[in-house]
Image 1 (cartoon, rainbow, N blue to C red):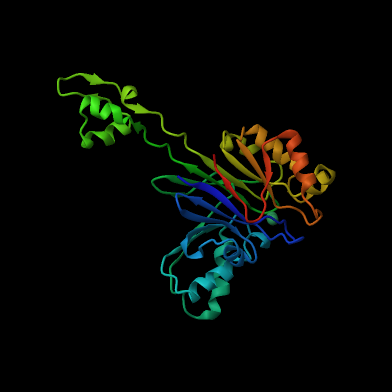
Image 2 (spheres, rainbow, N blue to C red):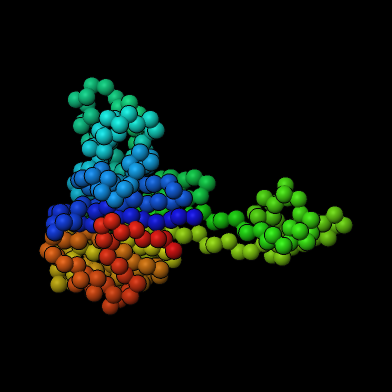
Amino acid sequence: MEFSVKILGNSGALPAFGRHPTAQVVNHDDRLFLVDCGEGTQMRCDDFKVKKGRIHHIFISHLHGDHFFGLLGLITSYQLLQRVHPLHIYGPPKLWDIIDLQLSPWGIPPCYELVFHPTQADAPMLLYEDALLTVETIPLNHKIACTGFLFKEKPKERNMRKDQIEKYGIHFTDIPAIKKGGDFKTSDGRIIPNRELTLDPMPPRSYAFCSDTAYNEAMVEQLKGVNLLYHEATFTQEFEERAKKTFHSTAQQAALMAQKVQAQRLLLGHFSAKYPVLDPILKEAKVVFERSSLALEGEVFGVE
Ligand SMILES: [Zn+2]
Ligand SMILES: [Zn+2]
């Protein structure tokens, strides 16, 4: 089952050196979730062949412009494209006032339903749930209220062993209960324990999106064992003071966080306009956490 992240924009507050403001598309089982929507996101969708019409949920981390100035353009395009599906937007409460103000000159509501879900940045909060996946907020430490988003697969059912179905003559109506962990009773009354009938499922996978934030110990517990951690790395250690003042992180701090939460892999992003090339950022992170990568635009990273 696909679980991946496509990077549409990886720049910090100022777009620079061909880099664009933050936006990502999370694909889980062919369902698309947009995470942040910096200026020009809809054009980036076209550049990287993301089908905009398949996005039904948009998550906005905070109200600095580099994370949501693309939202109104996208909302307007959906109107022109005669969108039918409801669009769910998750973000700080004031985001709705901004959307409402900008849509008010139309005089008519959009042709599709806009559903707004306000987020709070003080404690983790469940935002979305379906049969396979949950999305919750991650409270971050930024200059204004800001949340990351944690995409977590639900535990999967156990895998039925085909050879045992034949061996014990198991009827297909008994299989759902066995996949949920139940034992099986044969026609002559023997109990066959579940461990003989099934194999362990793949462990559930998770993706954490953390932008923008200063180094934030408070989120360690929530992110323990995350498969893929996206963490902003606006600066290198050379600008540690600047990072502190602006509530951003250095590459070293992002790598420390990946180490602390025992992530499988770290993705670095939200690069400052100070860096024409990004090698120093990657190099600094790798000293602390070897499995680090730059979140380069257009690239797709599997959650594994
Ligand atoms: Zn930012
Ligand atoms: Zn910010």
